[in-house]
Structures are given as C-alpha cells and as structure tokens.
Image 1: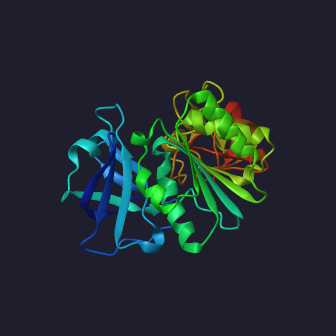
Image 2 (image 1 turned 90 degrees about the vertical axis):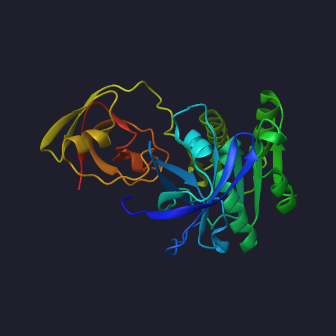
Length: 313
C-alpha cells in the first residue's frame, strides 16, 4: 500500500453522540472507483487504519465517505479523527480494496449488523437498490439514538430493515428466528463486534447453512481458539525458523528475509496464503474453505503446532 492520494476533508457530520461521518474529496486528481463493501486506508500518525466506504459506488462524485465511531482509547485512530480532523484538513488515503464483496449470484442478500458494523452495508444497500436486487438488514443497536443513519434508513428502506432495540435474551431469540426463516439461495453478510459475529456464524453452522454463503467483515482477527504457542517452521525444505508465541508466521518470515505478500493482516483476504507440506495447523482465518485448509494456511493469523513445513513461492 505504498501508493496514496492526498484528499481534503470536505465535510464532517455528527451522526450520533460518538459517530461522525467524514467526506473526503480530491481537488488534484480523480479518485479510483470502488465496489460495494470496499474500504480505504487512512494514513494517520499512529499508522494506517481501514474504514469502510459508505457512499454508493454507482453514484460516486470523486469522493470517499466513511463513518467512524470514537472508541475509549484516547490515543487511538478514532479519537484522533474525532478530536483533530476538521473540514479543510488534508489526509493521505490508499486506494480502495474489497475483501467483503457482494455475491451477485445470490437470490437474496441478508445483512446482520451491530453498532458501527452497519458501515459496509450502507454502500451495499444503495448499490443493490440501484440494481433492483432483493435484500434485508437486521440491525442491532442499544437504542435509536445510537443508531447512525436511523432516519435515512427509514426513509430509504422502510420495508427492508428489522431493528433490535431490546434485551440480550430477546435479541438472541429473535435473531435465531430470523436465521431459521432464510430463503434458499440467500447469502448472509455479518459485521459487528466479535461476540455478535460469532453468535451469528455459530448459529448458521448449527442450522447447517453452507459456509460458502456466509460472509464476514471483521475489524480484528477472529479470536484464536487456543492460546498461541511458539512453533517451528521449515520453509521450502531449506530453512527452519522459530515463530514466537506473540509473533505471527507472517512477521517471522519477514524477519528472516523471506518475502511473502500480505494485505489485510486479519485473515480475510488470502494474500498471505502458503502451502502446508507437513504438520498440523490451527486455522484462525475466515477466508479458506475446509477443503483448502487441508494443505494451505494464512500466515497472518494461523499457526502451526510444534513443527510444520511450508512452501513459499
């Protein structure tokens, strides 16, 4: 992601008490187009951070629009954006990438969002509406006041949104009911806090829903099923290196000057895929199919047990 564009903050809108919408424009050059579900990377003092684009890709007017929820971390990126970025400021952004695309072969699209997890679906719903495609949104939030785009959603999609402003038990019961009533050929898309996403994914699996029809957008890597342990890896039958418990295989390979491409670092894009020649792997990605996991792994999040052998091209 070495290439970037310098964009101007055209507008900042307060959507809720802790969510702001930022509109970026370029006055020097045309910005690359994007697909529904794409994100951009902002180059901030604390590093690069990814944010979903929320404007309709079919109605793009040389602008990128994102919505950011302020977290409790005072030195984090979201706090920096909320407290320091103002209209007229210049920001560097990398061009859009899409690890969470719509599957247009679907007969029906169902979105499950919680909190700020609504952001990737905002562009998807606008895009599908433009195409006349079928969709619905199930949206979990603590209240109407904490729900960004609430009035806009009611005006634009009055019959396609189910809200969940209720207790946890009632919410879970209603979500399970919604999952049981899905049409054949439906694709499911999920975004929100890990506990919410895990709940939806686990229940889909319990119902026997095909994994290839379940799509996730995570802000962080999926929670590892076991506590990370160090392991050894032999690369291309030549070089053996150790991967420490607090180190990813990807980082260990780079430290040993073994090049391997990467992008997301959270196990959703497949850029850092390597071939597994021998050994047992703990898979923590949400990208590979069960069949692919027989002889492949993603180096950014998955780990070996004791000693594995891999092939890196």
